[in-house]
Image (cartoon, rainbow, N blue to C red):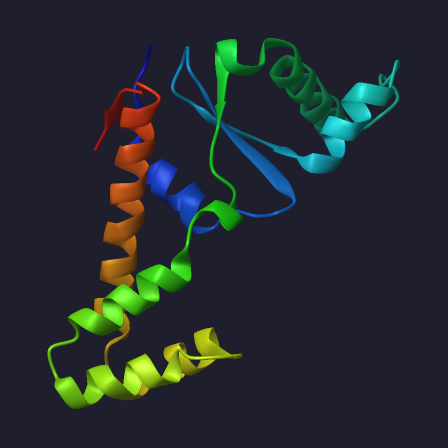
Length: 155
């Protein structure tokens, strides 16, 4: 099997969408995506020659995934399966300045936590530290995912 690009995998995990399904093709290491609506179409449509070419490609890929499933493709986790709130909380705990740490931990409680967190890290000048930390978390998650499914990867 070809190796999947770890950075490409991280990028997909970070910006995963609820409207798309993302999969690793085991045979070539490529990450493919299909809009969820095309899975429904693939299950119900007989003829699709009259559709735009990109629709046809999406339906053909959806059919391939539905028919070959786990033999050929591994589904990437959805955005619901990755707990970014936990990343935020862990980031707050590792902030060295105790005053900033306590303020951040207070800001991530309740509704609007993500917005307050982003505003506060911006005010504290911690944006780059957060994005580096977040990227590292996603990289570790991607490596664990590859290890769990015996997917070879390249850094």
